[in-house]
Image 1 (tube, rainbow, N blue to C red):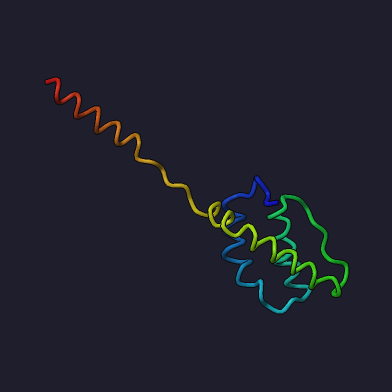
Image 2 (image 1 turned 90 degrees about the vertical axis):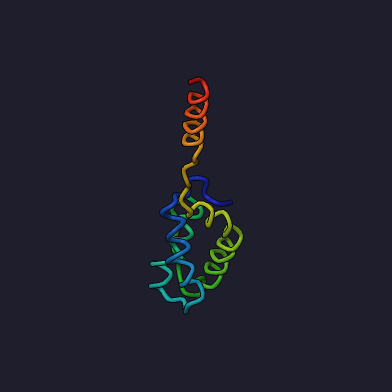
Length: 102
């Protein structure tokens, strides 16, 4: 389950920074710099680093799977919301109706 409070900044980091690193060689540095923070962001809570290198592969597989499952939601969250033009449309309609009354 994806963190319901995932911020736009976190989602953008997942797409722009974490995603390119997903297929790289896994070391302690990439685990600490990319996989642990990515998993923490997606779960919305602190997560423990794998205790030894023998656990890295399963940790990476679970993190990548979580990213793949929630990719569309992460992409949607990372996209800035556009302001609607509803207020502009109302103003134009009001101005037109005022013009008719003259």
